[in-house]
Image (cartoon, rainbow, N blue to C red; front, side, top):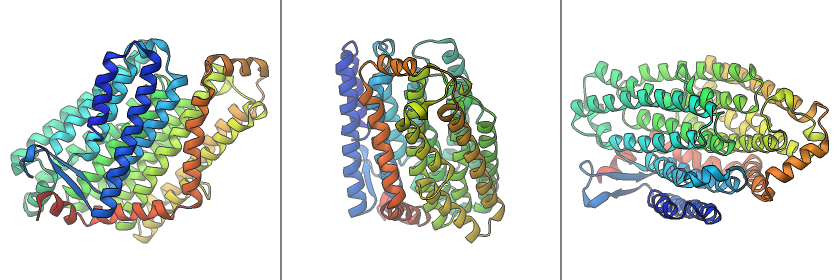
Length: 495
């Protein structure tokens, strides 16, 4: 259903794309239907364990398999929440021209690709779903045909096509060596293989391919060059789901498939995690553009997710899953707030905006709480997420990466304070009436759709901040399943 619902939504929207209001409402309806289906999947997995579906009755490892464990069920439900929140935000932030060009069609197609990638149990179909995501997201980037969009999209699609070539080549090698592409079956056969060096080579090819899609060091340069070019509504959903799907794929294949020589691969992942954190936050600290700062922070936060994988303990994977939930919600709020600021001032340049907290303290409060969470200020979700990961690092005696994580948190706080000082605190001399009129006129009467998704996500974030136990429980359950991967294999292969 998480694949069928967006597909059917896209098909319906093709025939009604000229009816703007209907398209907006139906797009939201499709996202809410996805969230409902994701909720049922989550309940099934929680009550009955790992769920599998053999398409056409062809049992694993021969047929196309969909698998939902706790990790993928969490990711699907987060995708539903983000898709629904973004769909409401679109009411105010997507212009007529993009709507006429089929914006909502490609949005639903992209969501379909994300859900397919999160549920597939076959590594070739993972490639297929990533291609669906790439095609849809490329079109969403270029809709509107502004010069900066085209420049950003060319960089985006060029580097991702290179990623696809590496991905497909690695799949060919993997199939040639093992005769299967079912991830559970691959896990069994690779564990029994004695060709460690060749498998390490193939695993690094997958790491490079997924690393490009996740924007890890040194493969991240395409992200800050492209993510700030489309409308902020597009950037927000890209930040929430696209790079995180890439990280999901890294975690999945390195906890399930490539378990043969973990020392080598985990050392590489830890080194990349540290450099990803540092380069991302230094890039953010050097920027003076609201969205570019947030785009660089996407990179730095990916490093924390990789850190949990590189440590590879039950506790560290729990931290990575918890961090994934935190960062998706928090970064989406921050991008939404940047969009509201853009509506008010018509720019993302920090030197040309200011005084927002004085005139609109509520907007300032929305930013301040989410920025504090991103930096890891207690008691917000970012504090808990980083606490779990840093604690896991010290418990495993990974002192260097743990220290890097703490250092990056300080620089993250610095860049957030820079935004606060320039955008919300400093007086630029701009008249209140001008900014207020912009908010009234440019939002076209849809003020509710601008603020509601931000407030809703902030409430979710605060609920997790002050009552993290339920989320931690499921993150821990996901971490246990990732470490005890034999349960996944048995569920898929019916052992």
